[in-house]
Length: 330
Image (cartoon, rainbow, N blue to C red; front, side, top):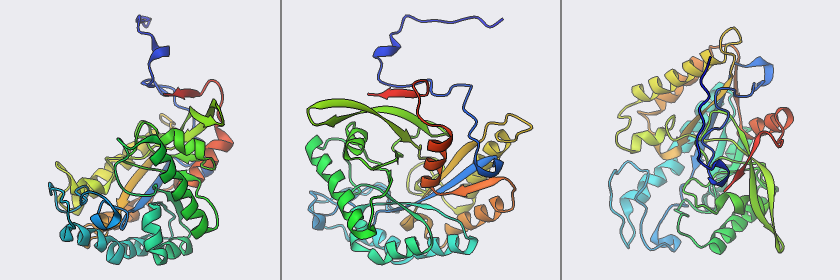
């Protein structure tokens, strides 16, 4: 008999959910009885990063091939050109690979980047991919005043509505703040956000938002993202130094989840997200890892390669928010 363990900790007053689905995750019921949902995200950030010419106080220093670079209160030509590689070369190489395999992806696209590269957005839509909002800028929002961040959410939404003819249904800030999720829900029209790394399945939250002079809670879907099955590990330490260990890590992650999704075994299908960046995976020596991984998974049965908006629709239809599966956020 299992011993019942209790504590005196007041869980109701603690603003985090450390339990989640625990050892009884819901049956995902992916389309076609798939054992795993595989979702690729391509981040389009070039032209939205920190730069003096964008009105910022210093240059970008995060997520480039120049590890440990300091920021300057002047233009940093090396960093700028490293980002420009992503929009000039890398994005086309990555899109060509997915086109070759006929697979859909989601792009996390910064509105300020989209404005500067509409030709990229044209190609993304032409190839049948999803454009999700990556916020207005690719900057840190942690210490930004709530009202300023609210304006950034509004402006990003407005830019995409003008460029796409409709608002994206997905949101991911990345370098977010404690206010981000509430402001996204308050803005309205977003079916999900991905500012979480907490699970391998989507989950529901009750999120506070302002409605006139009232504070309401609304059910909101979170589709978790990833920081580890992510090419950003090429630009961090310790990380990947060449294509082979990245491919092997993706393969190992896929194999584990694929096995867990076997209906004759644990029968707990999950979701594998792979995060990509134009300026990182788009390099000639790294794209090999992506090609090998796509070749590997496309030779496996019962694999659903999909967009994030498709996951959101599936979860809304098959696992709608209820009192029992929705936790309060903050």
